[in-house]
Length: 218
Ligand code: 5RP
Image 1 (cartoon, rainbow, N blue to C red):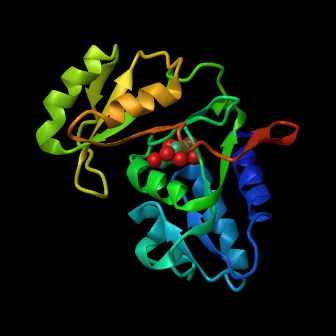
Image 2 (image 1 turned 45 degrees about the horizontal axis):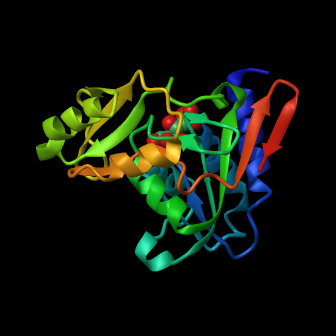
């Protein structure tokens, strides 16, 4: 199986969590795109979606799937999204596509978070994938200095602006031994909008694509 076939297999498996009348939270990225394309087949069954990025909203609308404002949709029963890394506790690193803040909002407002990923994303210790931090532009330099104090190497994502008009610092070379502690520490830096650790609110289910099929961790 190719990596794309594994992504499609987990996206199809996630469609089984979609029930009639649901408003579905929809993530961002290449794996989430497979989910969106599959969701098009079920569009008559659901009451709409909440998208975690402008890109996903555009793709959903392209399929004729209704996209609702998260403020109007209320609490969601289901959120489906990919990840850049996951450990076995379903703590995640997200934000490779820069959509971490809206992803975290949709995850927080959802009863069940189903994460879909190919097996390359499962790690023992997180941090090989640079951890994204969304920052108010004015605070970029200050936040970078604070991240250095925490032991990381922040690198500005050049030429990138988030859907919220902010910048991203990617933290390199940081082994994340205590994800909840680091998530809280980063959240506590003035000027940080959010960070890509999803440990305080981890995934509830991880559907992992392998060459022999889809593994489920929960
Ligand atoms: C976007 C994300 C994505 O979920 C993450 O980057 C995984 O993407 P892909 O499915 O393309 O590997 O967090 O901000």
